View 1: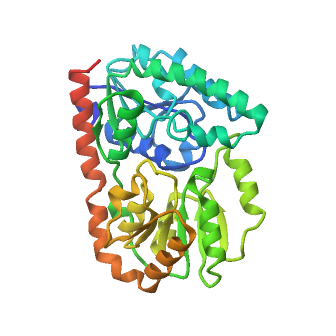
View 2 (view 1 turned 45 degrees about the horizontal axis):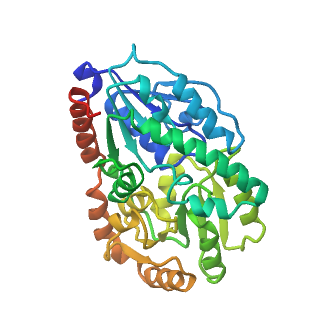
Length: 368
């Protein structure tokens, strides 16, 4: 049932559309399922995903890495669409700053802000003395207001059990798990080609350097890395670092269209995933829907999707990764049937049913 059919007008607040990743694609999928409008800041990239979705921009954020989330938080906090919609969904890390004016509401949480919580020690440790002081001040203040803002959220839906645990750990809030879905019918297998595929934003927490290190040790294998980064964020310096010593069998493709991405899945040998404690991860499911196995680090959401007959999970250690790549690469086609069956368990139809039910339950009886 769409919001139009139920006469419930829904708005989805989403942080911004810069680099296209799982969060951005998920926000658009929710908008289409619920016949909802999207309210965001930087909106340029929406057209590259789906031009049919109605988008309202609150204005551009400041491009500086520290000021970007602060400016986004202010834009959401100052916004007021309470007279135009009946229900509000927040998606991302900063959109929930609009919660104080927009009820009833629900936060579809892909993760609490990782720089504030589980990745906080790593973020601080990587800074020099001057940047460390600025980062400490920024995180301390913004985390305080983040905690206050969450009090205005009526209901929280987590994207995985991993995120449900983070929400309880850092916010002391219960949440319901609704796994994101993929449209399995869009994916297919053409061949098991001569390259491995990696699909992710080009950020340090994705451990792209570990992937490159592995394929430097496997000169007869090829790796294609699809994904980009948003201007002004921490990805730009990381990419410059990666490009300094890129082996000839590894290629950074940058951001690619949906059509090209589906074709890359269809022709690859297998998928490689190395993100640090991944929130959930749609890419393994997309690969499985294409009949392709997955080699992933044994962390986070990967533990909830990748089974023994759909790939191999290993510690984030080079030798373990190399062993898994060699093992899966011997006969990737043997995983085909199991991968497709596993992906079907996360089909978009199921996500649509559960999301719609959660929205209508929250709209009728929000929990403070």
